[in-house]
Length: 336
Image (cartoon, rainbow, N blue to C red):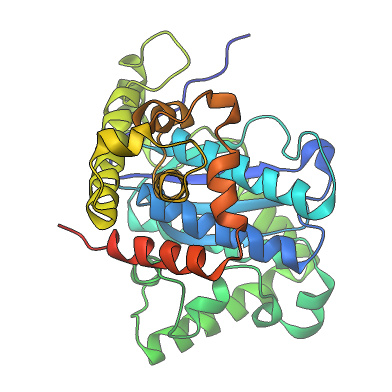
């Protein structure tokens, strides 16, 4: 049976959820959770995603995010693939970490649905009756975006204003306090048996549906689906690919200017040349272009051997390499 095609378009909002293979743990410890959030931040840097809410549960995670570019598939492939590799490297494991395909539900940008879904995500630890939450309150749970909603500081890749506004609160100290009071009231409601039953019924559409929005939104999605070609890639895949390559070309140009080396001379260098590997590391870290594109552009040999070169830079503890890596990263962050 063919897989359902992903709906991708500029400005799309998704509720993404993924479970561990066989419902096994995807986070063994806090180090894994920090690693996932670090990878999520990198994914946002590569793709331009805007995260609005998240929660990391023991064997699954939920994300609510917006894609300014039509790049859900490329970004999720990088995020889950990268986290899986790093998880196995840290924990000495192997095999499939996630169960099948991740679930990506398009969400209407209407404030009602946006606010409701962020609430569903933030209340997940309460719904699961996690011990630390039931004992010390939702504020004590460090692995969701909720804690950043009740304080001013938050990661650069997390956007809190839209959810607060959609929920009827301002992004001010008073507004954040009011949001906290509102969440605590909902926590109290679903902590009772009757409240839990009502809560379960309320979120049936989130758990079972293929979209989250009104009838108008459903028709718009249906029209987009009609334009999808009959193959396993989004109608917007070509546009997303061109965007990624344009970003990679910009990074390549700036890196070559930084090192003062023409492309032809860089291509002629050995695969393990430090500056060549630095450029490969930069493009792989900051874009979603495939390894094959980098190999062909820099002439770095077989694609199945490519991963070792950016990894050499990532793992290298030599002070000069670390210094060059930071300089290159800083210089290429400057926008035109």
